[in-house]
Image 1 (tube, one colour):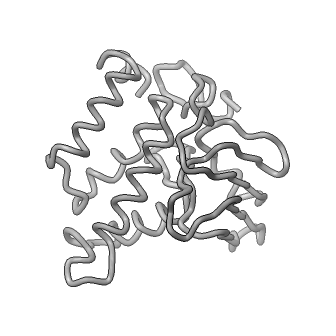
Image 2 (cartoon, rainbow, N blue to C red):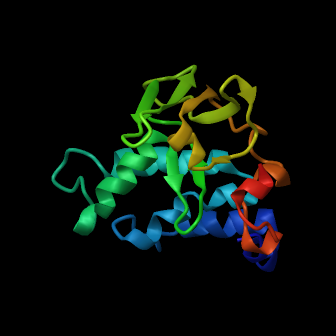
Length: 194
């Protein structure tokens, strides 16, 4: 992804192209191929835009109306997208990477049935009207967390990820060292970047 961002003209151009994809009508959220595009902003240092897209698509496309599940929910793909997005952690296929966006709840806990450990994601300044959808800062187990992603150890070992929210995009998760790992960054795996 890092090489693709560079190939397409850098983070600003990559973001513009993603905006076009989401705003032009070319993208249909009823197909699995669209899911990851919501979170690709993380690679251009704009995780707030991923949160903005997620908080727009879920109520618009996934709701309790007759058209409330777009596309064909074969094998639970639509339900998985909604569940994970609303939990605030969307997995990047083939990597030990979960993109962080604010959950749609004040707090959510996941108990690992194998380890018995609990992973909790908590929103500070939660707003049920979803005006505060941008992460301003984060703490993982009481320590400052600036990466816009987390790995599976959070779910295996448990812990608390505390996200302070606000109504405007911030600098959280925007530095190069905060971006998800990419094969083109020469990292062997996600742990090399932690």
